Image (cartoon, rainbow, N blue to C red; front, top):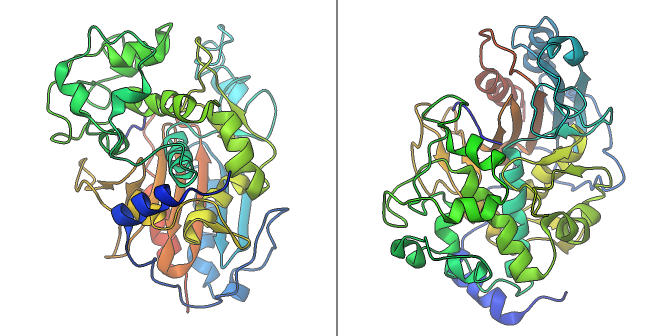
Length: 394
């Protein structure tokens, strides 16, 4: 959903990735440098034991508990591979959605069986953080040689679809353009409300999400214009199926979730059987933090490389600057929400889903919320990042 702030490794693939992405790893953090791998659960510690001043995080916790930022239901902070904050906040989503929850289906965002938790389980909708997770699968497929490189022509993954309506310019678009949200496809998502004129609302009401997206007109040449485009992010589902022979959720089970010990998840499936890679993934907050930790460790997990060397940097580099009024940058389906001159990587999702990674301080933070019921509350992403940055003592 939209964001509203709006096998063995193949040598040729390694060379292609290295040539494209070669760069130094992220700057190491201060403090404890011993990697702790939470495959079977996070080791717990107090903030102080991991070199954090607990006061900024405690203030944030108290404000969340008091309802200052609306319906936040989870807060998780990891430092140096240790879980230092894991808070739950009870929210009565059944009452909040009453009167708007009559249609029980996976795209009714008010129905408590579907959102924000999936049918009483602990897994929480991630909305557009799904995009960031799916982009990791693209990197894995490149490492495994199933995708040659990000310079592969985009439409080469869709030769089984009807391309008769495609603007000729789209034939010049690459996988890189897709990952950077610069395909040139005309898309109206963050420039209007969630009504019938919103292209993503139309997408979710369509019978074939991939065909719908391919059929859209273009208003720019590939690579020349950034526009937030959830349909483009859903095309990653088609890319993965064509390249690997497996759907995104199946591929993730083997190559991402399995190695990280993520055993519980839900992924929405669209009418044609493709997983919804624009916003359909559900994970529990401590499990989502593992995704951030994987990136913090440059794609390594317990001695094993999960994503190709350089992919984390490529994903989180500010490839397009100042894409919105908040001044955020954008990478390969990852945001840059830098603050105080500090690089801050993020996955952001509708309703208040935040995955925050601050590499220099070895910090990962997760907030889950469901602020969709109206009323004005202050945004939490700024205070969250400020609290994280204010906490390290070393």
